Image (tube, rainbow, N blue to C red):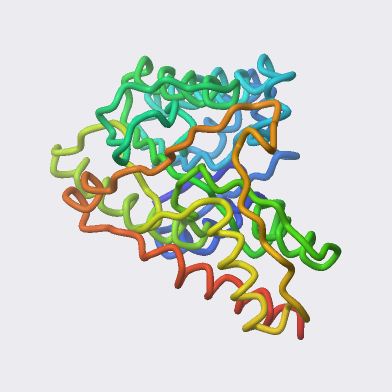
Length: 299
C-alpha cells in the first residue's frame, strides 16, 4: 500500500508518520513541500506520489485568526480539500480527512452524532464545513474523521499553554462552561491506521460507504477541568514545582474573536459499530502524554 500524508509536521501528522508505516510505503509532506494554500499545485503532488491512500492531516487551525483570515482558511480547509478529493477520485484511492467539533453551534444537550446538521458559529468551523462539502461533491472514496480538543506532547496546544502559564503565574483563570473531550494526537493516529486498513478491506469487499465518523476520546470535561488535570499530572511527573490556583470563569469573562460551542461532545457509536474502535478515556491518555513529556525533558 502506498500512502500520501500531508501535514506531516503537525500534531497529528507527526504521530501518523509512525502509525501509518506498518501499512506500507508512506510519502510524508510538511507545509514546505505541500502547501494547501496553493491548491493549484496539489494535482501534480498526488499524481507523482501515485498513492492508494491519502491521509490529509494538513489544515488551517488558528481558530481566532480565522475570523480575520476566513478566505485563506477556506482555501486551505475547503478548496484544497476539494482538489485532493477530485484527484483521489480520479486515481481511485481512499482519502482520509480530519474535521472538527466546531462544525456545531454547541446548543444540543447530548453529544453530536454524524447525522446532526452542522451549524458552525465561527469562521474556522465554516471553513471545515466547506471541506466536508467538497469531499461529498467529489463523490469519491473518503472518510471524514471528526475530532475535538486535540493536544500532543509537541507543538502549540492547550497542554503547553497551561504548563507555560503555570510556570509564570500564581493564578490561572480558565473557562468552565465549554464541554468537550480532550483527544491525544497519538490516539487519533493509531486509530486512523486501523481505520485505513479496515476501510481498504471494505473497498476490496465492495462494502465501503463514504462519510463522517466521530473520533474523540471517551469522557468529557471543561477547559478548566482539563487544565486542572494537566496541572495534577505535571505535578506528579515533576514538570511543575507548584500548582497555581485555578479559578473557573464563564466564556463571557474571557472574550475571544471566535465564538466557541458550549457543547463539543461527539458520539462515537458509529465508529465502534463499524470498526470496533473506541478511543480510551481522555484522562489516562493525558497522563501518558505528560509522562512522555517528562521523559523527553530529562534526556
